Amino acid sequence: MLKVFRNESRLILNRSYSSSAPSTKLFIDGQFVESKTNNWIELTNPATNEVIGRVPETTKEELNTALEAAKKAYKPWSQSTVMTRQQLMFKFARLLRENQSKLAAKITEEQGKTTADAEGDVLRGIQLVEHCCSITSLQLGDCIQNIAKDMDTHSYKVPLGVVGGVAAFNFPVMIPLWMFPPALVTGNTCLVKPSEQDPGATLMMMELLQEAGAPPGVVNLLTIFNRNYRLKKDSKLKVCSLKMNFICDHPDIKAVSFVGGDGAGKHIYTRASAAGKRVQSNMGAKNHGVIMPDANKEHTLNQLAGAAFGAAGQRCMALSTAVFVGEAKEWIPDLVNRAQALKVNAGHVPGTDVGPVISAKAKERIIRLVDSGVKDGAKLVLDGRGIKVSGFEKGNFVGPTILTDVKPNMECYKEEIFGPVLICLFVDTLDEAIQMINSNPYGNGTAIFTTNGAAARKFSAEIDVGQVGVNVPIPVPLSMFSFTGTRGSFLGTNHFCGKQGLDFYTELKTVVSFWRQSDVSHTKAAVSMPTQQ
Image (cartoon, rainbow, N blue to C red; front, side, top):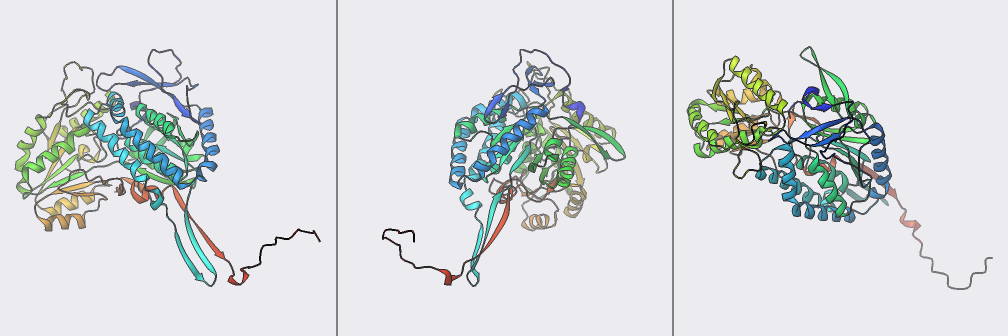
C-alpha cells in the first residue's frame, strides 16, 4: 500500500469552523453522533477537488466511549448462538447486495474509482460476508471421546474480545469487510477506522448492519485518532501520521487488523505486538508480471494493461512491474497502443477506464517518481503526467504511463508508485526474472504469462511470493481462500480472508473432562409426600 505521510493527509488541526459541507458522523453504541472535536480534515472529490464533506479527528473521550460500548456489548454478543450470528451475516449480505449501486456511487464520489470498479469493490466485500455465513462449519472445534478411560477432550474456538481494524483508502468497502464481519461472526466486538479520505461507504454499511439487526455496540466506527511517531529508515527520520496508538496500546483491545502503508504497518505490528496483541498487517507491494516470448500475445497485453492501469493503479495487487523475457520486449509498442486507447475521465462518466488518483499529493508523488525514472535513465515511452480531462481540469488525473529500460537500482523500481504507471524491465532468461523478483523485498503477488506448462510450474515452485498467477495478472483469491502476501508485504501470523481470516479472531480453549461411569445413578424419582425427616 501507498505510504501516506503527514503532509499528504490534508490534515486541518486546531481549527473550529462552520461549513456548509456535511460532517462525517461517528457510529458509537448503535447511534450516529456528531463529534465534539475542533479538528477536522476536508473531504474532497478526487475528480474535481471540490470539498464534499469534513471528517472529524475523534477525541479521546469519544474513543473511550466507543471502547466502553464495545466492552459492554461483548459479553452478550459472545454468548449469543452461532445461528444468531450466522443469521446476521445472511441479512447483512442481502442488504449489501440490495444497496450495491448506492455504495459504489459513494466510492466513486469519494475515492474516484470508475463505477464498474467500485461495484467490483462492493462485490468482493459481499463475497467475504457470504463466506462468513459458513461459520457453523468454520468455527467447529475438535473432540476425542475416551482419550483415557471415562475422559474426553474438547477444543473450542472462542472469541478474543474487543478488536480493532484500520482500513486503507483504496477499497473503501472490501477492506473494512475483511475486518468487522469475521470479527462479529466469531463473537467479538470491534472498533473500525475507515480511511479519512473516503469514509462514506463504511458509514453507509453501519446503517445496513444496524438494519440487519446488529445489537448496539458490537461495531463502532471512528475516524482519525491522530498521533505522531518517527520511523528510522535509511538513516533518515520521517514523521508519519499515526491514527492508531490508542488501539495498539489499550489493554482492553485484544487484536489489531491493518491494511495500509509500510511505515504505519510496521509501527502498528511492533507496538501492538509488544503490548501482547495479535496483529495482521497487510502493507506495501511491488508486483511483477513475467512475460515469456511464448505467451499468448493478445491475451497477455490486454491483461497487462488492465492490471497496471485499472483503478488508476491504486491496488496493492496492481501489476505495476513487467519483466519481459527475451524477444517479448518487442511487444512494447503494442502495449503502448493498448494503454493509449484507455479512456481517462471522472469515475462516474460512462465508458471511463481510468479515474483520478485519490489526492493532489498522491498525484505529485506519482509524477515525482516518474521524473526520477527518466532522470535515472529509463525511457518514457508513454507519458500521462500532463493529461487534462475536459470538464474536470482540477481533478487528480494521471494518464497511463509506461517506463522501459528500468533497472532494479532506480527509485521508480524500489518504491511502490501506486498510480497508473507500468515500469518495464528486460531480462534474457526466466531464471533471471525469478532471481530479480525474489531479490525484491515485497511478496504480495506476481504472475507469469506463458503457454509452456513447464515454465509455469518452475516459476510457481521457485518464486518467493505469496500469491502467484499463471496467465492471471491479479491473483487475488476468492474469499474462501486467504489473502497470502508474504515477506515485506505482510506481518503477522494469520492472513486476511479464508479460514485464517476467521481463525485470527478466535483462540482455542481446550476442556478435558472426567466422569466416572461407575458414578451413574439409577435412583428412581420419589413420588410420595416428603416428610422432611
